[in-house]
Image (cartoon, rainbow, N blue to C red; front, side, top):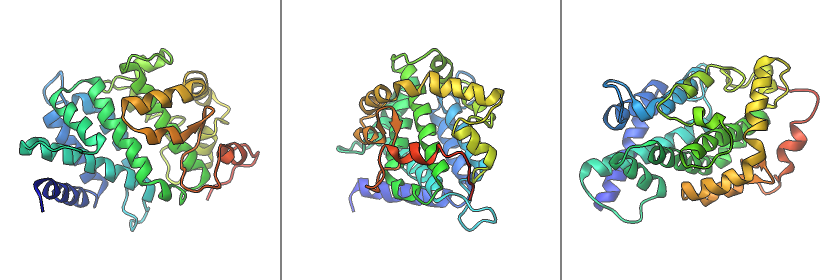
Length: 286
């Protein structure tokens, strides 16, 4: 077994052990940012703030719970998170080993670039390329979720790509300038707003109204403005740019004519996948 294979196995072992509880998953990333967060203030997580805020929301929602827990987690959310942890952990192990390897997965290279040169742009490329690959790895598991959860996966993805657009110098709207700073509190604030990031898993009926943009209240209106006015009209362009930023061509398969397509592995699904099933008047929950 060569040195890279040894490090890969070590990374898998670390992630497997951390995956036992949501808190250990969080701890793994918290400790990473204690080393490599590039904080302005000692003791803070710096560039890891938004990632940790999002993971805290995942934990509170219950998606990272064990499948055997009293309130089981989600196979899909757990898989995406685990692959994300693996890619970042492998990069950390490679960096700390002092070794150099060729032909690494793009997200690992991006994490190495981030560790060497921590800034908003290098962080987004490491983070978002890992998320995109995580979506690809977990694609088949997405179909085990209900249709509304599947659509919500697309919302989560296009919001984080939109945030990245601002640090990449591509303007798709003024909100991204606030939302795009990974050091800031925007993600923590948004994940506390039910309209943007529901706190229940599986989704409640009220959550589904927000996810499908049918909640007739102030929070629902704000979410409508955020998504429909600032992001959705630019989705095709956004995903084309994201494919370049993150060296992730697979993301182009997640969008067509400004309509989200993820998950993509079942051929009978098309651009009409969500448009037909999410526009029914009656909302069903599982």
